[in-house]
Amino acid sequence: MASSDRYGIGRALPLSALSFLHTHLSAAHQEVTMARTIKKLPMLPAERALKVISGRWKAVILYYLFDGPRRLSALKALMPGITQKVLIEQLREMEEHGLVGREIFAEVPTRVEYSATPLGLSLEPILLALCQWGQHHADELNERQRLADCIIRPRQAAEASAN
Image (cartoon, rainbow, N blue to C red; front, top):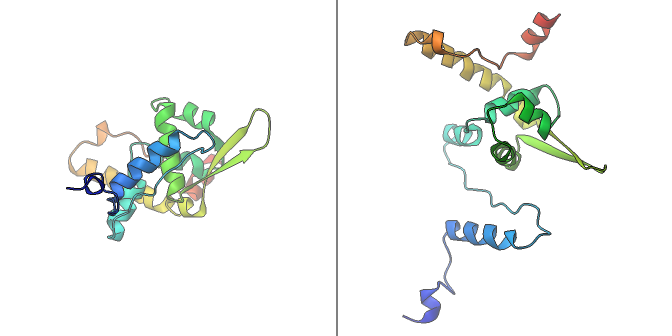
């Protein structure tokens, strides 16, 4: 076996190998703020949707961003159970998938705000439906008393109850 074959030179590398190299080589350059490769999403639309919104905290983060832009520290304060590292990872994934936007303000110190994009806001009725289904599921299994209250409510109903 020639040495070029042993190391894969001249052959196409699998996507996972390219992602690994890209991520690790970019980390050595300080000028690169965040070099990510977009992972291939599933072809089945339902599976794609679940992949994009899956994660322990994504629905909760989106819920808080439905009300408007928030700084990282404000999001962290609203979710004491999440670590800052995980919060940043979840925000980056949602930004990569077009659900969240990040705005950097030229101030000292730099201010960064996260907001739900129109695509992210389009998930509000879907997250509400998932919450309602979760309540129904708990009712069917006689586990409603163990269930936390839904935090995702239709904006109009939430605004009407506040007045």
